[in-house]
Image (tube, rainbow, N blue to C red; front, side):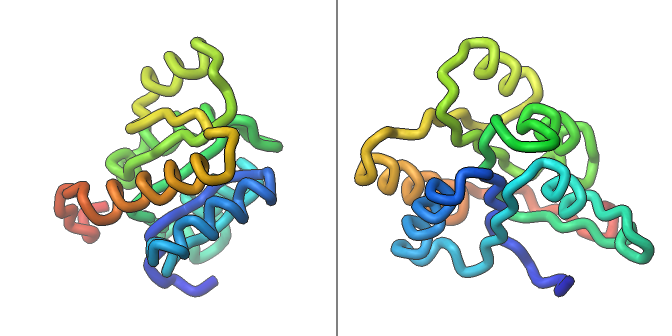
Amino acid sequence: MEQQEIEILLIEDNLEEAELTIRSLKKHNLANNLRHIDDGTEALEFLFPTAAGGAAYHFRPKLILMDLKLPKVDGLEILRKIKEDERTKMIPVVVLTSSREERDIVKSYQLGVNSYIVKPVSFSDFSKAVSDLGFYWLIRNLPPMINQSHL
C-alpha cells in the first residue's frame, strides 16, 4: 500500500452514505486524500498495521469520520483504541451516525470523541453537515504540531 498522506479516513459501512459523504467533501475540495473503509477490522488494520514490515509505519489522518454501527468491530471499540494509543490519540475523531441513543453519545465522549453528529435525514442537510465538518476540521481547526519521529 502506498504511504501517502491521508487527510480524511472515512469509516462507514453504508455505501450510499459513504458516497454522499465523499461527494459532499469533493464538492468543497476537501476530499483530495480521502480513504474509505467499510468495516471495523480493516479500519484497525489500516491505523495499526500488523503485517510484516508494516508495524513501523502508522497512518495518521488529519481527521477520522466514523459511524458507530460497523461490521466486525464497532465504532466504539475503534475509538477506544485510537484514543488509547499515543500515536493516534490526538487525531480528531468525529462520530457521524444515525444513533441518538444516550448511551452511545455518553460512551463516545467518555472515550474521547471530538464531536458526535447525528446524520441529518435530508440530502441537502446531510451534505451541508459533512461539508461544514470537513471545512472546520481541515481548514479552521489548528492541530498541534507533532514531531512524527517521536511517534
